[in-house]
Image (cartoon, rainbow, N blue to C red; front, side, top):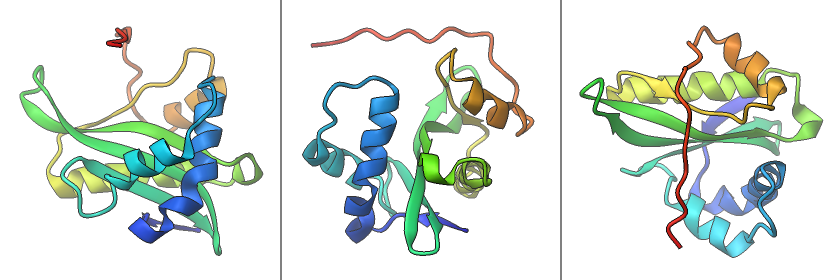
Length: 148
């Protein structure tokens, strides 16, 4: 198992993972070109965030994307793990936890006060992994307003 930043020339390898993640969250017709442009901006070094990959040998089996942001309630910088996905063929082997730990390490290295993330209420598989990290489950509700 290897967890490290995805290099710009490796982003195309991650396109099936991005599409799998989006399909899981019922995004209609994931767009490889849009995903390539979007996720490439998080390749190290980036002031926007960090795109991490999980490799099983030469096989890229998972990714996590962390955004550098801030919390006004903490009055501090935080890291937001906005995306985490492991291919079905590699689940249950510790890749998700290793990606979370790498996101936390990257946030600490950047001087962030916390690592935050959300998941769907019915994603109980992910919640078991998240609960095992020692993170506190928030009581907040997330809202989204489409701006189209």
